[in-house]
Picture 1 (tube, rainbow, N blue to C red):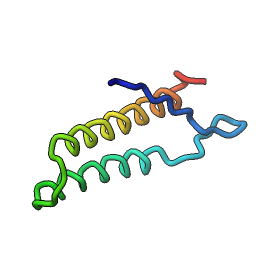
Picture 2: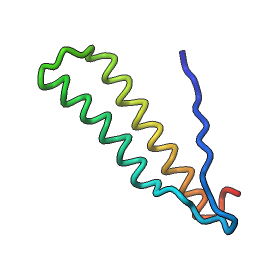
Picture 3: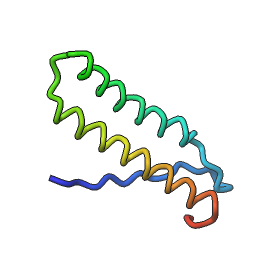
Picture 4: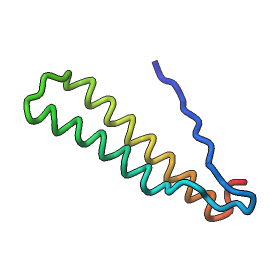
Length: 77
């Protein structure tokens, strides 16, 4: 099952971003990495599931980064 997630950018009336995208991206990547470390430490978690979730969080973080880069360079309205 492959589902797409659409993330609207939160901007003010002047087009300025209102969410620190770098912080959100970092949080998503940190959560995924932490789950992977728990598996490596021997926690009773399904390794394949954790890996798949960590990958999806990283992809989402990448999409946020790309959307924000496009926005800041005038590529999004």
